[in-house]
Image 1 (cartoon, rainbow, N blue to C red):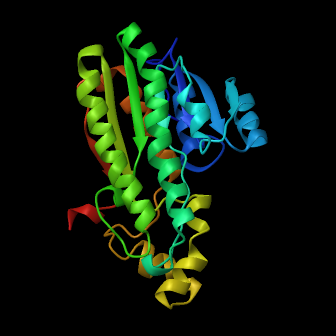
Image 2: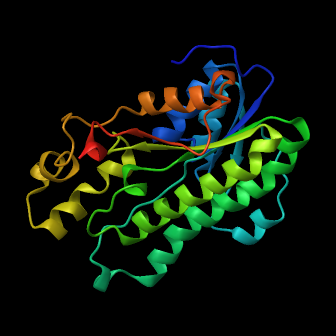
Image 3: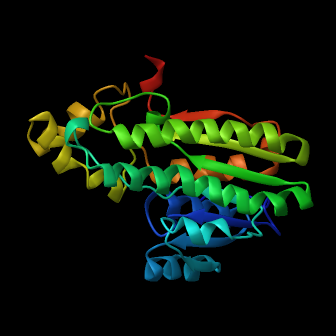
Length: 251
């Protein structure tokens, strides 16, 4: 676990914090001294992680944008991580699924940032860390909604960086390749179907096909980067996109 005391007295809110990258980020931020609010639609999972970290659980449906529009958040660090995936050719992509992904992974982060900035501005300090993806910088077939949402998140993050600079607020994206999480594991069957290959070949041929370093990213590595970006030593890092993709985007 990332160990530092740079976030003592700070409150960090992590969406999708009950598992995967969100869980790793929550642990790293707690290790850096932050009081962590674990936000997740999985109430039991959020409470379990909050209990582990001495933090607080927030059971929330981030698709309920009407409720988010009226929020006021006292968060010093906001980690927009919650996400879902759908693998399908565009002509077969359900428009309802496309809309759901954009709401969860682009509109909801905007609403949470909007809710958190007044507190950050008042304190003259804040950190927004958006869990983007290599797909925020590159496209892959059969992921039109995910790629569109992540590209949009990149633009949102840069805009927050420009507006927040005068107020001591930074905003950055973390761009991992395929991470060893439940979200990735759930893709295997769909990837096999759309590419016409056995499930046993999906990781090697599809997920690691463009990556010189032939392994999935560990969630804890992503969490450690999140904690660093949230800390005091990253005050001059803003508007950036930090790849953690094994060299994928070096091509």
